[in-house]
Length: 630
Image (tube, rainbow, N blue to C red; front, side):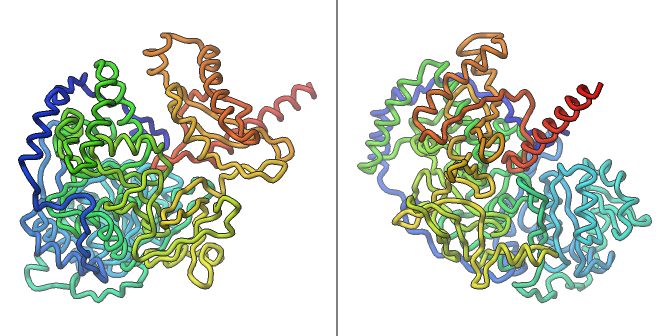
């Protein structure tokens, strides 16, 4: 299986767009006028105050009874088959069965349990059982290499590992080195207990019998909302991973925070495409819609995004910028190929003008685009990295709400979010109701490190007291490591990451993300990474670029040489340099042939990339030295 560290956006397939509805604009306008007002919630309406829970056990008890007949998860368990629907009632039964079995059958009460799997129903069951009273959940990245996985299992002091069949080879390789792990529990297996091995279904089946006979050990567990219940290891884009300790309060406050700014109802369906071990997806992509009685559609994998959207017809999608940018580019390339680009752009202006006077026909005019995204999409949320403002505006121009969020694993994850009723494209949102934001030592532009104080903030770093003290001040402010500014209305704009900053010889700060965002607008560039090459007194602002070979081949020339591609991109970079302050200008370009190493939220691991360069340089110097000796 290909690692997301080597993530490459699949070639999304869209048909040529006919855009026939554009020609019916007068009929569509009259239809909306005659229909009159509806009672349904619309963007801009006040959002009802969400219910505030203390623990996830409380959420579970409430919603699995209240929405027992509603669909919770829809998943395709066989690629050749259809999506299957699982209700809240069935989910309740499975969580109670697994949780009871883990406690009574395997004796795992208050112990640490690793979950490593692709996104699947059993992951959701496992996580909730642990949150509701079994012990401490330790979700792990399914793409971890063998040595890292083994190391993190040992660091976490895990007593059991719940894993999918796809991870069986990994488990078999490391099991003999994990002496303290008492049980290896395989998902979708009915295997009876044999030494340390047991099937997930077997544990659940025994637990269900115990529960039916009156054993209510799971829900009888009293949970302290501030007690350590989740351990998540950060992806470590600049250094070794840290273990983030979370509690129930962090998760329930995230639900409240998101629900105060975004209105999700039982009619909504979220599309799950990101890895569940990351708080972005597990909290906002699952626990939040779960608390609202909504459903979640599980994407089969990155290359199936478009067909899965059509099959499951979600209303909302949480994604990282790279995915949104790719969908945007592919849709617009196909519109251009269809010869409809000018017509679509003019209709954006017309429908924007109509919307100002209360006539919104965007969904009807751009119905063909909607149909290729499932037909019901109304919200796209972008987070985890900066995104070109132009893309956000285009999403809104065709009638989809474009929201942005901001936070870290340490805030589980939400600290700021765009309110649905007050969007500011370009901003990552404003502080959620349970958080405060401020800028540390702002410069003349108001920029500085973003500080966060929030009830969603972690308990601290696992077994790293000194790192916790560095990160959280005595008065509770968390140093995010991100650089940004707040506008007069309290909206946050992120301009860079303090650890990524390039400091020039004369003390000027350059934030690579700012320049990368500009370069990403060049159609010949697929991905890029800006960095400082050399020492501080002789620093060169440089960029590594992965060319968009497909676009170049279709729009410039087929089978271009490496030199021609280099010159093509360099000419565009020179144009960008003219728009930048002189000390930010790019002086060196490197065409990168292989993929960037990435985290599972598709952020480039700068530290790892620069370390590779350092190792190459050291190797080269060593070879030169040896050649001289000879």
